[in-house]
Length: 103
Image 1 (tube, rainbow, N blue to C red):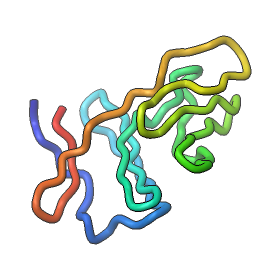
Image 2 (spheres, helix red, strand yellow; image 1 turned 45 degrees about the vertical axis):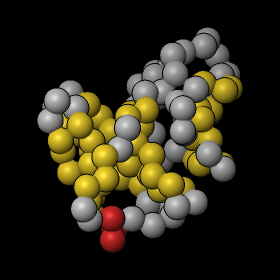
Image 3 (cartoon, helix red, strand yellow; image 1 turned 60 degrees about the vertical axis):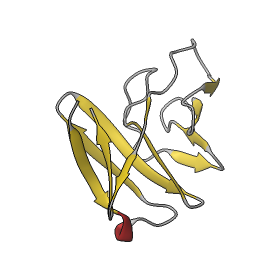
Image 4 (spheres, one colour; image 1 turned 45 degrees about the horizontal axis):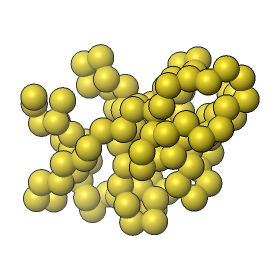
């Protein structure tokens, strides 16, 4: 596994959202109510980009088919068509003044 820096902590704020591509991984870093989350950046249903998804509390809603996922766990909580797998969630690594991921 290798550590990748994603963002400096000073740049993070509630409502922050940014997409990263690291090798074959497509990731999205979010900050909601002071907590940071790292999830895959494409919906597992039909691979629609989640960069413009709605966030209600700790639920992420895909803009294409309105599938809902728990941000903290990735669990699929609502589907409008056939079920799909859960959203992948990655553990964040906080080092010094940065937030990153080990892949």
